[in-house]
Image 1 (cartoon, rainbow, N blue to C red):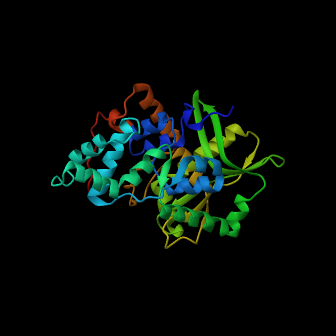
Image 2: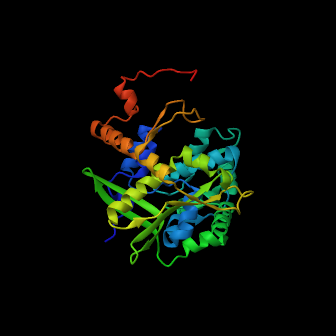
Image 3: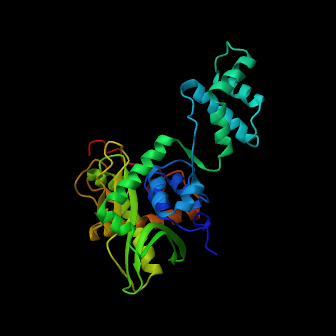
Length: 329
């Protein structure tokens, strides 16, 4: 029986990358047992194109719009109160939320209840009914559909996504230095006869696709690509692995329509694995700042886990929480 990816206790690239900015988030990623419940347009498009069954199990297109401003806060707190008490909405929940947010104290209790029923009841009931899914509005659905359509309308990308040897949502499990590891690729073209693999990922960016390099640097997609390639090397020994590809489209409605294929270079993968010492100063790195790859991050993550210390970075613990100010570098 196929394991549930999120229930497998193993180190993933998300835990490694989170460690760069927040050990606490790295801990959450290391021990998460369910996929995130918040909405991400990239994941929406991923599943729409690669796993429609999971897409249907994950999302529900809401028919009612969340109220705005003060009524929105009021309605959201009614929802939280009802969920706390078994998803059953009562008058008491409405009055409790009214008191919490201080909604129009001039109105009588009966008046508040009637106002809530008129302006927010349908939205709250829908949220309670489909609360096990991520509920999106119709505008967001249309945005996701436009992105997916744009990707499939690009001949070069369509050729990739329709390749007869493509595998979507490929899960990899391996062990390295006694540590269980895992990865989940959006797609990989696996030719078992020729023993070749072309791996890749779908990405969206809030900017133009021409500026995707900035996102790749910010979110360290080089670590993701290198980690996935490592998993393929363990799980498919003897196979030639071709360069990792990111299929990228903008999530900005005004910029959708120019998807690009970004191909990882050997240097991208090497820095994603081993890191580097950065010489020139950039927006993200001061001069000489060491850039970590998954090799260093894996060792640090294991140290955090074994010592159950997650409040500071590895360097801050090693330096006894003393760090140079260096404001002029």
